[in-house]
Amino acid sequence: METYQKLLLENKAWAAERVADNPEYFNRLAEIQKPEFLWIGCSDSRVPANEITGTQPGEIFVHRNVANLVVNTDVNLLAVLDYAVTHLKVKHVIVCGHYGCGGVKAAASNTDYKPVLNMWLRNIKDVIRTHRHDLNAIQDENARHERLVELNVQEQVMNLAKSAIIQKAWKREQRPDLHGWVYGLRDGLIKPVFEMKAGTSIDPLYEFDGL
Image (cartoon, rainbow, N blue to C red):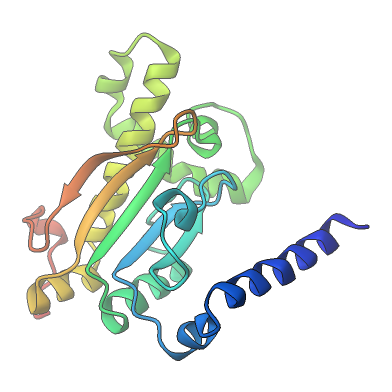
């Protein structure tokens, strides 16, 4: 049996189990989607949003990319953000990174990963440049990497606040709150590292008029 065929068999078993527990399970999901949370996480297969938060399908709206970045030219991310904030009316947006992130490690090196990855990882290199003084003060390489993971999450949360999508929702509806979390692969625990309540002041340079 091919490995992908096993996935299909597991899907059938999972669906049957859900219906056995609750015959209306899929009817409920099909009718409405009203999550309170948007999760912007890493594509790493070891960090599944629903499993590590103990939530069910329909409770978290999810976007994932390499190293959980919020890039102001990423139309995919912005489309997800706009839909979640403007139409689903989520109350919280969570950026969740994880210790041991390969994307963050790659960005901290000088390896040439060829055009597309180089372009993407450049966003993390900018985080390193911004916080170079603090990072260089950390002698232990592993501790320095973990701190970079946290700082990367912090910068991505701030990037959310710089968007017109978030600013408009803050001004009109005083939501959503923004959260920066880091997941530990070794212990399975989530560590909150940064937060911005709705309406938090940011550098006026990034504020939009007339929202």
